[in-house]
Each structure stands twice: as C-alpha cells, then as structure tokens.
Image 1 (cartoon, rainbow, N blue to C red):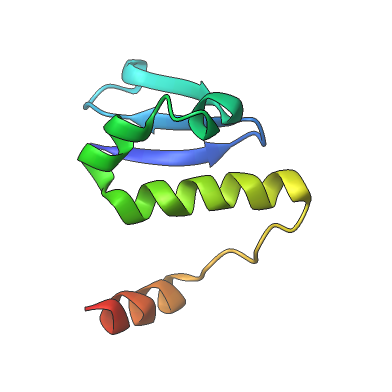
Image 2: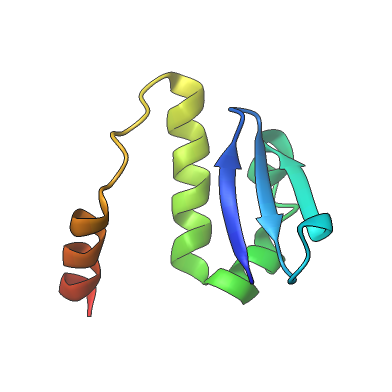
Length: 81
C-alpha cells in the first residue's frame, strides 16, 4: 500500500509499505522546501508533486478547494486519458 494524504492542516502523511506503523509525517514547510520532492516524484509522479504543493499553498491562504467527489475524479481521469 502506498499513498499520501494531506492531514491536520500542517503535515503530509505518507504510507509506503503494508504496515500502519510505516506512517511518516512531513511538515508543510518541509514539503514546500523540497524535502519530499524525490520521494513523491518517484512514487507518485511529477503531477502529484505539483498538486501537493499547490494544495498546501491554497490551504495556507485559506482558499481550500471543494473536495472532488468520486464521480468527478473518475470523469477527470477519463479526460486525462
């Protein structure tokens, strides 16, 4: 299991292995400083890294976008190919 999640308004949580004990928390400051760039880019891709940083910046500005529904996500993925 691999995923990353923006949580608590101050950190990004990543799970890289099968165990919940493998959770890693990284502060927004560290993410924006590039300390996760290589890991996120290698595991999730350049687009995810870009979106992660954009989301953090939006959260800090108070302009948090409405969460995407499952149906919206499916349509977006189809359009993106």
